[in-house]
Image (cartoon, rainbow, N blue to C red; front, side):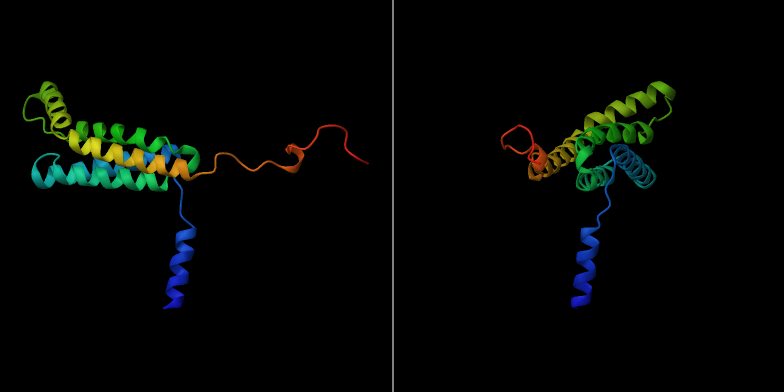
Length: 151
């Protein structure tokens, strides 16, 4: 049992970090995939699409690098709009029908959009507050008196 606990702790310490671009690509790819599966099963983006979007937004906010924290809440609405645009029902109206389906999907699924984006922003905000405000100063830049060094 203790071996299992040690392995789990080792895995926890070695978490992978996503860059800003990786966060955007992961969020968009998984959201589009969830929308495609939802469209195939139920005829258009709906609850499954929303659940996948919220889940991937939270995962992206947890695993983004500390330097790229702002990328997670920014990538979420872009991924949502891309997922809706690529998987919305166009009916038989051509381009006009596809645009109408996209705008209808954006209007009807805004609850999922807000939920995923707000959760990502909250997680990123908490992570940013937990980071140290700045690095500790080196001895060379300490608050000691300035002047020539002793020889």
